[in-house]
Image 1: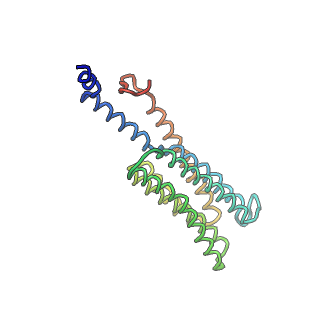
Image 2: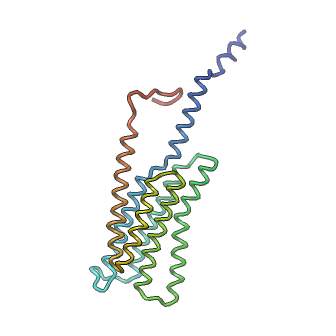
Length: 227
C-alpha cells in the first residue's frame, strides 16, 4: 500500500506536466532572445568614433594630420572591438542550448569576425595593384558598410526580427548614398547617420526591453520558478 501510494504521489498530474513544459519553453525563449539593443549601442559607438576619426584625419586639409596607416589602424581597431563584443554577446546568449538554434546562432556570430577578416585581406590584396589612396579609402569604408548591412539583413532573417532587418536596409542605403559624396565626406555620413542611427536604435530598444521586462501584477509563478 505504501509503495502504491508513493508511486501515485510521484507521478505529476496533467496540469503539473503542462506547467513544467511551459516553464521549459519560457526558459528556452529567454535564452534565444538575443536582445539587439546593446549590440546597436556598441556598433554605434564604434562607427561614430571610427568614421569620425577618419573624417578628421583624411583629406586634402585634415583637421588632425596623421599617417594613413595610423588612421586606418584606429578605425579598424574600433570595428574589431565591436566585432569581438558581438561574437561574445551572441555566444553568451546561446550558451547551454543545443540543436539547430544553437548551431545557427553560433554560425551567424562567427560570420561577423570571419567576414571582416576576409574583407581586410581582399582589400589589402587590392592595394598591391597600385590604386589611388582615395579609391583605397573608399573600398575600406564602403566595404565595411556593405558587410555590416548584409550581416544585419541575415540576422533579421534568421531571427525573424524586422528591427534588425530594417537596420540592415538603413546601413545599405546610407552607405550607397554616402559613397557618392566622396572621401572624406563619406566618413561623416557613416559617422553621423550610421553611428548615430545605431545609437538611437539601441537606446530605443534597450528602454523598450527594460519596460517589457517589468513583471506584470497578474503574473502567476510557475511550479519551481524562483520568486
